[in-house]
Length: 239
Image (cartoon, rainbow, N blue to C red; front, side, top):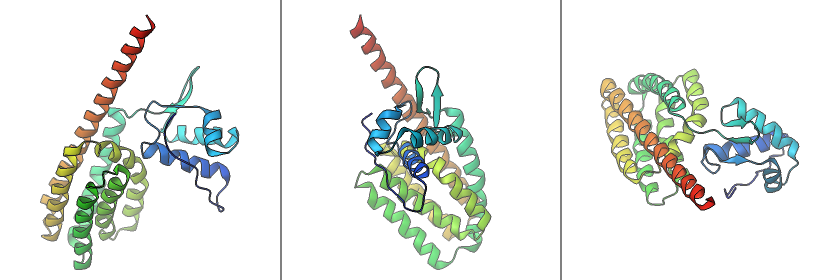
C-alpha cells in the first residue's frame, strides 16, 4: 500500500467517523485504487489509531459499495464496474436535465458571469496537472448550474450524488485529450444557458456525460489490461 493520505482530526466528530471520512475520501479521490487490498493493521498504523475504528469504517464503506469483503482475503477497494458507472450516470443525466431547464429560466446575469469564470478557471487549472484540483474545478462549474435552479431539494439530491460521481470524475480526467474536450463543452454549455436554449443545453449536457462514460470505460479497460499483463509476467517469473 503506497497511497499518500493521512487522517484529518476533527474535534467535533467521533474517531470512527473521522477514520471513515478519511478512507472514503482516499477511495473517491483515487488515492486508494480499485482492487487495492485494505489491511487493517497497516491502515491503523498509518492513521495512528487502533484497529476498531478501521473495522467500523470498513463496514460502513462496504454498505456504500466502496469496499468489498473477499473470503480469505479481507477487504479491498471495490472495482468500478460498467453497471455501477451506467447506474450513476443515468441518474445524473436525469437530474442535470431538470437543473438545466430551471437554470435556463432562472439564472441571473451575476450567476451567468460566475459560470463563465468557472469555465475559465477549469481551463487554467488544466496546466497544473493536479487531477483532484481539476475534478474540484469541474464540480464548481456544475454547482453554479445547480444553485441557479433555485430548487433546494434538487440541489440536495445532486450534492448527495456528488461524492459518488467524484470517483468517476477523477478517472475521466486521467485522459489528457478529454480535458481539452471538457473546456469546449463547458464553453458551449455556458453559451446555451446564456441564450436560454434549453434543448441545446440538455443535448450538450447529455453528450458531456456520454463522453465521460466512454472515457472512463477506456480508462478501466486500460487498467484491467495492465493488471492482466502484470499478473502474466508474475506468473512467468514464478515458473
